[in-house]
Image (cartoon, rainbow, N blue to C red; front, side):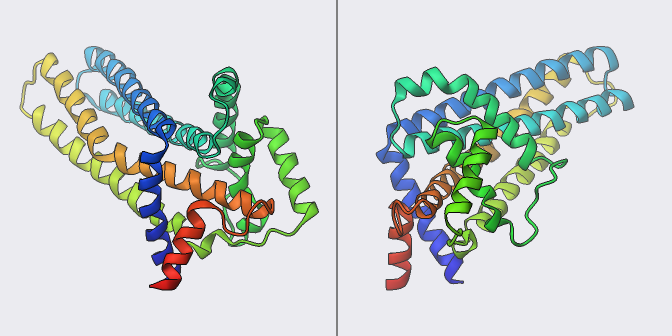
Length: 266
C-alpha cells in the first residue's frame, strides 16, 4: 500500500510538472497530432477495404488486421511521447533536439520492437529491474546515444556500481498498466459498439459504413488518448528520476523526493 500511495503522490506531482514545463505540453500536442494522423490512415485503409469487400468475412478480417497495426502504431507513439517528455524533463537544448530527433525516433522504434511488443524476448522475469531495462530509454534520450550504444552505456553503469533502487518501491508500473489498459479496452469496446450500432441494418450504404468506422475511431481516441498520454509522461519522469539515482546525481531527485516525503509525512 505504501508503494501504491507513493505512486498516487507521484502522479499528483506529475500533473503540476506538466503545466510548469511548456515543452511537455508541446510534446503532448505532437503526440495527439500523430495519433490523429494514425487514425486518419487507418480510416483511409478501412475505406478501401470496405469499398472492395464490404462487410463480408474477409472485409471484417482485414479491418481487424488494420486495427491491430493501428494499436501497434499507438504503442510506438506512446514511447515517442516518453522520449520527448524525458527530453523536456531534463531541460535539453531544443535546437539539438530538432536536429537529432529523426534518428532518435528510429531508435525509439527499435527500442519498442526489442523490449515492448509481444515478440520481445526481454520481458521482466521478476528480477528485470536489476538488468536495468527501465533505464535504456532515459539513457538514449539524456545522452543522445543510439540504441546499441545505450545498451553499452547501461552495461558500463552496472559494472561501475550495483543498481540499488527497485522501481517497484513506487507502484508506477502497475498503476500505469491498470489505467492504460482500462482506457484502451473501454475505448475499443465503446467505439466498436457505437460503430456497429451506427452501421447496423440489413442493407447499409457504403458512406454510412465509412461514417460508422470514423465515428468508432474518434470515440476510441477520445476515451483512450489522454489517460495513455499522461501515463507516458508519468513513466518518462519516473524513469528519468531512477536514472539520476543510479548515476548518483541525486539520492532522490525531483518528483520522486516530493512523493516519498509527502507519503512519509501522511
